[in-house]
Image 1 (cartoon, rainbow, N blue to C red):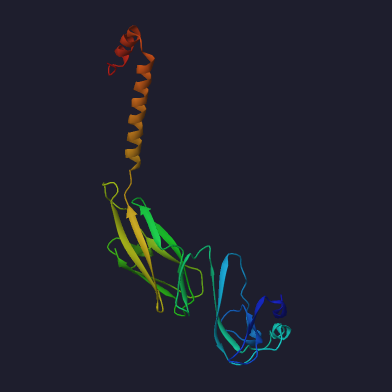
Image 2 (spheres, helix red, strand yellow):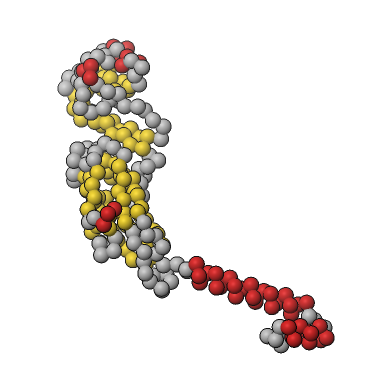
Length: 239
């Protein structure tokens, strides 16, 4: 659609003790102005945060005048943060920029032996960087790297390389911490890998349960002494 019909916000405010006026706030991409401006698509399950940073002067006297001012640079300066809430769940914000991840706590079994992706988003101009600040003797990033990074204002992923945990003791775990930074923002992801019953152990346990159940059924079916004696010749463990 045209810029005239684009979705926008009309903000009412005043400077000092002056009269209240109206400002138009558009959902636009950073970097372009005037006729080159690009509008953001407003998507479902996305969060949009508008922070007013400065008022350079008064706005328009009426709501309709502000609405019609789409071709004029606004006196209201603001920042717009937007991200996908289906991908980014945990967010830290310092009043200027944000850093968000899909999950802050990760628990996997010892059989996890591949890449594990975590969604990351930041609007900090330099993007984000990640290092393993605890447990770097076993946990790595994709390709065995010790560090990872991503650009700003884009849906990016942090990919962990989680190796097989060779430990025969059930219930034993090991922990690691991944620290992400974006400018002055910091966010930790805690990773735990733990041991569980192996498939072989579970299968063996199920087999013994079946043998016990089968023996119990035979005992229930051989109440009479004559039947019991005949069964004993076939199943000597029945006494």
